[in-house]
Length: 387
Ligand code: PMP
Ligand code: GLN
Image (cartoon, rainbow, N blue to C red; front, side, top):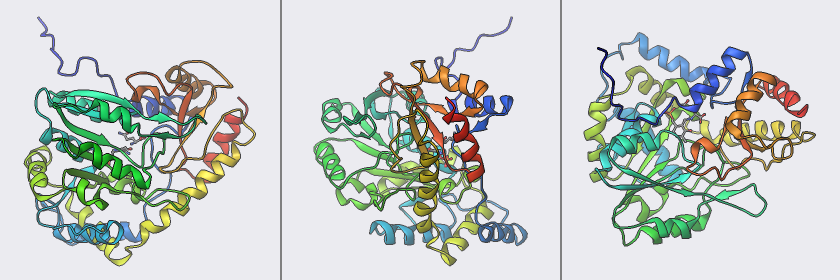
């Protein structure tokens, strides 16, 4: 008789990013769902990786990461966030942010611990919390009166913290809403956690894609928050290379030590030629990421302008490479159902927001990725304008 599996994640299906990308492929739709650029990483970076592939960098890298890569990460953090990181004790290179998040959650969350996430919350957090035996508490972001801007609800967050709260997971610049933290937000957060035992896990993979002249306010920049934080970054977004799966965790030594206990057995170490290639490239061109806001802002503006004649309501994204479109004047269908129907019928795939929420408070909103060449954006917008 076939043995039935008692699943550790009985209610979990396949991630929406796979579902929507697969549907786009099957139907031949323009895929603005899963977030990935339609253009390549810089040629000079590919050349450096190729060079290392041909020059012997093909065996295990050190478990915490290649020292030369940790060195350029430390330099970048010093320059942009004013924080001095000890490369031996405070930086760990990991297999994309996904591994970093999983290792951090596994390292920190114990059975019965509560973890607060802010909805809409990226879909990898809760399964990792579940596997660690933790309990996820969802705190929705607040919508402004204009119905476009999302921001943290500090009052509700404060009310959700109790003796069991072990971890708060933050994600600013925020996927999918593009929300960013204001100058006062970091201080608000500091005052909420000051007399608690909570740790903070900050998913900052869109750190270099913030628009309209706003800075990225990292938890790394705040002395008090830094003491209790693990900050996760990814080179996937920064170098138009989401398939490379290269990221890192920056955390104070005592937290990094716990992170490494898990990382060493989740993956041990990360692709050696990739690490050396990225280290060389960042050393020779440390300002590459400084051009990213202008590059993506131009794409955002182009996409939004193309949709000017459409019936969607929008506010240009503040960060990331995702634009939220409110379809309330076109349809009242549930977002996930509509995203699938429009993929089949209109030929444009998007991501529904309610799948990232405990309660469907995001209503009639879909996320569209604008990290695409202009022709693709124009073709997609033409289809969307017909709705
Ligand atoms: N966090 C967020 C908010 C993301 O959008 C993504 C994916 N783009 C990740 C984590 C995972 O990043 P990576 O591809 O480096 O694993
Ligand atoms: N982070 C990407 C997005 O938001 C998807 C990553 C994935 O497919 N796992 O679209």
